Length: 399
Image 1 (cartoon, helix red, strand yellow):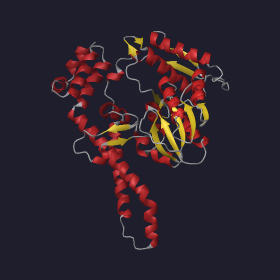
Image 2: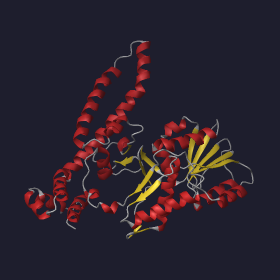
Image 3: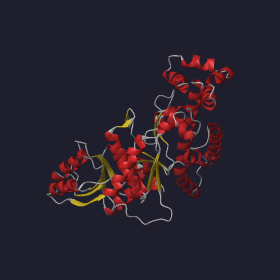
Image 4: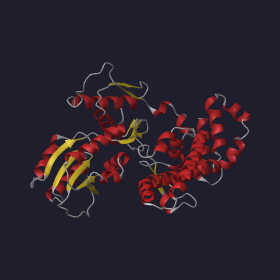
């Protein structure tokens, strides 16, 4: 079960089904993020997709020499946009793909709008989620609850995302949920309703051991999210922030222009794929090894080109050398900034206090035996907002 592969297969199928020729990829805000997580722009360019546009853009030019591949979420807003597009088509032919189940009434509305008969096909491709890693996906939802209850809009989006995941992986699971959580129960019921309603879509080959969808409530463990993380991916997410594999480094002191935003993707970065779950100490050692490998190869690439064979070897090896140079610069910068923040915010000391409080029931005793708590509190009371955040976390441990 590889969610990155599943979404990538959908995108590849869309492009292949449109046939040869120059193409434009029309997306909405959410599907733009979905596509960018599994394909780089250079990879899609190799498949004759030369233009990327948003369906809600008002300034798109008429380009009748292009085929349009539309990948959209089946929202009312997007259906209205595509209806307007079909009434005044800007491209020669349209291949329309929705990322989830679309109603028959919406399909009828599209058919009625297609007076010029430019639509080649309308299909459902269930890539309605952000594929972060092969075994991790996200819906990029911030704040799904109102108090202890679901926000109706977010419950609907979460249900759509989960059912799309099941359809993309071709699974019709048994559903189990945390009995003590009303939110988990509500989500399980909504997913079950969709499976029952769209039973024809879920008629997959039976397996000897049926797949299991297990729904747990994050509120059941309030401690773990408060602890500082010490593995590479988790530290980047916690201290720098990751948005669709992109990291904003513009606030890093002395950062060069080309490193103000970097991409960390396990699909296209071998070093990141091999180190994303390793702890911070191991990352430092591996960064050193990466630098040493780079230094060994660097002189060879800069040798004088004295023959045709030398020139040929240089041309063949240059792209690989340039890629390695970019990888080294990126990870040295990211790890360097993580190290700076760890030192600046006294995270080693803060983490020690956190572990003492998390692992002992007697919090007073934990603080008495810990020699750094006073320094941590003093650091946390500085005007630095990030330090105050760590201070607040420690206070929450007592609640």
